[in-house]
Length: 400
Ligand code: GLU
Image (tube, rainbow, N blue to C red; front, top):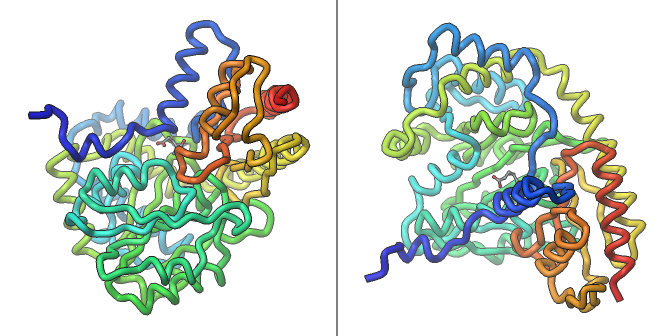
């Protein structure tokens, strides 16, 4: 009898985490590594938020809390949804978990039965399909490449829906592409969903505040109020507030789903870290002024990286609307040979050779379900980005 479950054997470990871990190991071993792997801001959590965490420790607010969040934080999240998204979620319709990942996992665990299908547009954030599999469902992958601006079309969505479809996982701005759906583009998708009342939407809004130029963020239940009763609106403090390690994600949704998610969490982790919850309360209800500064900072980095990558023969890098990733195509480099003799047959070969030969860590496109591409996280200093892009150019120029 095999020891590991068939369910576990059907999934792979998170490749974004694997690349980040590998880069850290190489650096610890003394290699000169620039990691463009991890999707997390390179600066500290703002001081007033850190202070709220310290105060929670000092004041002894360190005990178990309600399994899916302290009431004060649920109220702040409810107000955040009203303020930023014109969505009315009562605090009883709010769930708080250890990161956006746990929110998504709870919702899938609470709702999927064997045979249930979940539509996942590709390129996707690496964990979506494997979370679906872990929870017993079947991911249905819909590819949209560079020529489609990495966006799902209403026609493709319509064609993919079957009687077994339970969820669409929607993510804008997207990890890994940074592509964002404008209001009318999203409305075209929600119009399709309105014709299929059995399909729910899980909207991962994690990059809501990281948007550039004139792009305006919108969320499915905001664009189509008719979907409110079958939408889970997911968000978190990790990216916008530089709080990745605090692990706080949250969602608003129909009360019966939130209750079911609480049941899953009460039998797994119980409450997310109490200290992090108090810090997140400050993040969401304190000043939001620094968000604009962060946006300006990331937009400069985006522009630097896009320009530098587009100057490389064989790389084509579209300009993303948000998040802190670019997802350039390397179709022009496939089949070439590195000076080491390694043939670059796919994007994993490219990322591996790039790391070995230049010390630049990126995540290969296959991890996100669409090749041949690679993901750069530009949440690092401009100096490091410029140096990394110079190394990528030198590497690509040496391919023959
Ligand atoms: N979401 C981030 C990324 O894509 C953090 C790592 C993870 O959880 O995947 O890099």
